[in-house]
Length: 443
Image (cartoon, rainbow, N blue to C red; front, side):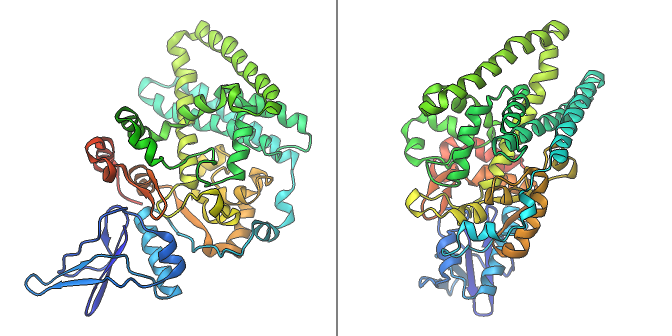
């Protein structure tokens, strides 16, 4: 939680999971218990002052703050967001987008050229991914055992590029020929054994209902009733949203894409075709790998890069929309422009990752309009920065950012956005306590 501690001649601001003071004096301060993030709406949108403020003890000269104080001006709010950004591992936390701004207004500010499909650039991305993946497999074949993790990291990142190509195809931003898009998308997903059409249908709903409680098909906060429903399920959720979170896309891949019951009747035929392609790849490709290099070869050449891909799939997805200050809202309160512009995070990764993954983390313009091809996303982002810059959430990937997500952003709370597991069930939250001990805390 965020709080201020006021004394006659100084003000202190504690923010974020670690409650670091911005200014220090010989005081002791105590915040009211609860979420270690902040309640964004009352604080930044209304800027009202709390009445309960200080309790002063003459004996100990201790000042206690028992409420989140308010932001008294726009400048004060900007400074507050700056301190929160530092605490959470962000470069900038965006101001709240006004309620009367529409998504169309944001789209209309984008240059028309960012929507244009360039076949040469599209196929260049295919060649980049194919070459980097081939290089990765060569590295795996030649690397001594102690260099294999680096070869797997490269190959897993390279194969993530195939996913991004299929992702563009699903959004109809790869080619003007829709049959070509369906073929390329299906083939690009095969090394990942991801069924293209089921994923496309689910992903379209994510874009239509980004950060909408229940209806979004990507990362959602944990439901409190589900968390309390079973001790065994609670432990599984704590591990899944804690230490195993960078690989939880595996569970999503398996649970969301292989059951025909999860799709509308008019979608089922295309889903069946995609599933047939995936099972054919598994039935032919896997035995060939094992025949040529044995089960160990299957682990080296396919499984480990696949786990590397899922690390990026999970990490990219949770960073894109998960932070203590980003709310998930029920459908009746949801606003498209706020969800796509304010509720999406731009995150810079090392340049080699950006190249191999085709700008997938230039994510805000992608959510403003999914028809923007991946190679045009940087130009679109620059335009959005010029016109809507103060509303953007931006970061450079760092350990503090990951630590915040994995140890704070857990159970849904309407007022506070998230409540961490270790506040609701401290006796079961050893995995979260472990992460707090071992994860670095630097941005």
